[in-house]
Length: 95
Image (cartoon, rainbow, N blue to C red; front, top):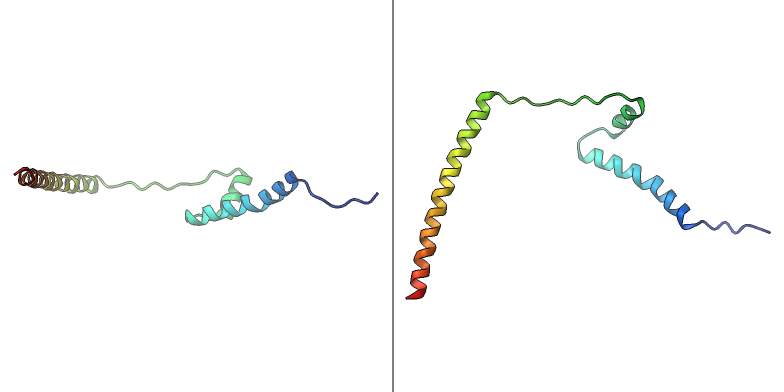
């Protein structure tokens, strides 16, 4: 008896995954700005990936805190002004 060469659904799924999973991995690595091939080689060889951390200077942190505090105060003043304007409009509406 001759075989018809039909493939089961699991076989089709397996072949699709063999193609899609690596493509998705390399695509995600590319979008993250990483080298997918180098990451894969490091995983296979068992090497640890080196990550660099950015240490902010204390002055930059303090400056940023001051900027954010000033911005917060400005936004609170704007909110109060908008609340007053809203109240005035509500009073006009009721009259």
